[in-house]
Image 1 (cartoon, helix red, strand yellow):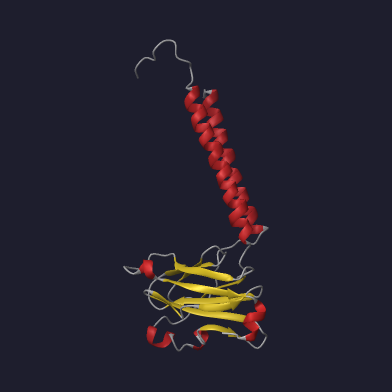
Image 2 (cartoon, one colour):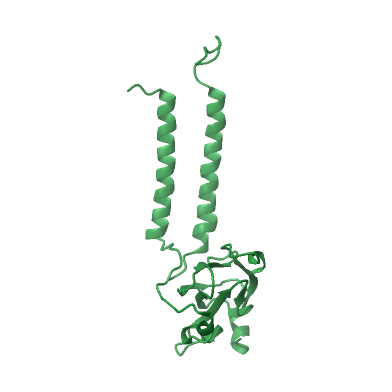
Length: 46
Length: 167
């Protein structure tokens, strides 16, 4: 593994923020579909 | 084992999200009765006998002695038989679906009506359409070169209109 250049933060904060934002949007979108489309359509009765 | 704080956050985050998704789906399935349409009923899929099989007749819309409305549809490559059907709004409609050849999918777009149609089985579900209108019925299981043409219409009319001229 190559050496990290000096002066960089220990953890990639920008990457963390970017992927974290993606995760939050993903979860919110998943629950939007779940609540407003999936559950809103009601079950079919077998 | 030394695990970095950030890695712990990622692992716990992923675990929490997956658990939340699973619990949500389990809740819908158990408490909300959100199950895939299914019905264990076998039928001889031979095309020569399927069309006249009493359990798939009459095809289209029919009303039984109790007043319940049934829709029987047979999927063939690449059409639904019969094509357009007209049903009343705000009445439970029981669909009986089977295939004469390959696996199809009977999807009433924008509604909860959506079932796999498998040769040798009768798929069944009961649903109620609240809003009158024309609904696209599409095959959503790839069934061959003409799959994209396997679509028809389900017409939902107000109950009074349907009672006046049931189709």
